[in-house]
Length: 248
Ligand code: TYD
Picture 1 (tube, rainbow, N blue to C red):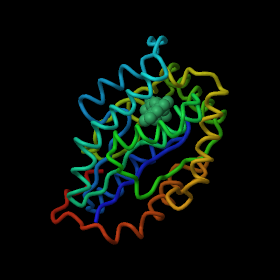
Picture 2: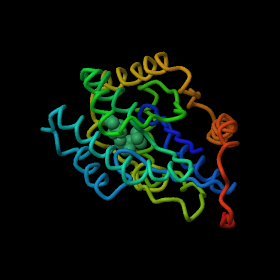
Picture 3: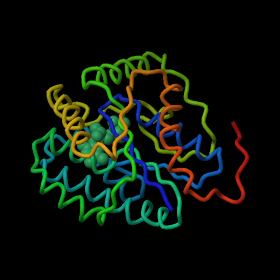
Picture 4: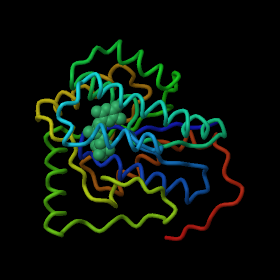
């Protein structure tokens, strides 16, 4: 048995922080677990990430954007996610295909059936077992992200989270690196509102897969709820035989 968990939410929802905390928790308990993010998570995917999120690439066609996100996903699934799941591990993925449905589908208005076909090609049909949704309005999320950037620019950024040193280095806005303001963040508020509304529709279509949490709670309280929600799945995961002592 393996477990594939994805994290979704609008900008500034704190899902990357929660994904890292969950990784840290599972790793400390001796579970075989990896944390990856989209777009990225592979050498090729990281290059695609730079192209697709670059603020200067204002001329990028919507079709190109949709194909690039899918290309990065295809690489990540083939190179990292599927092999790890086949070994019985837990994969935590910060954004996955639902981001394409929310951002390119509801946000940009791309045809949903077309996106589903493209996603099936990119992922070979691999679906998450559970998707954690951090619920926040688009306005609150953008405001949070703007505030963090201002604090960062003023040298008042919150200290990095105290997580194990073996945590994969993801870069970007994951609580360690600088807050990124990318090409998609820079889109109009109405776009981000459509994305957040789109997520609600996706949840309503498949309520059994999604677990929604109020993103306005304290970080630790939220982390506890997310870990608790996954407990039933963990019973089926084989622990690592030798665990590395936690260095925290
Ligand atoms: P990132 O800095 O990782 O933002 P976040 O911390 O919010 O995940 O940038 C990823 C951006 O790419 C984010 O704005 C969402 C967007 N995105 C899509 O539009 N489609 C996709 O399929 C994926 C995976 C991400």
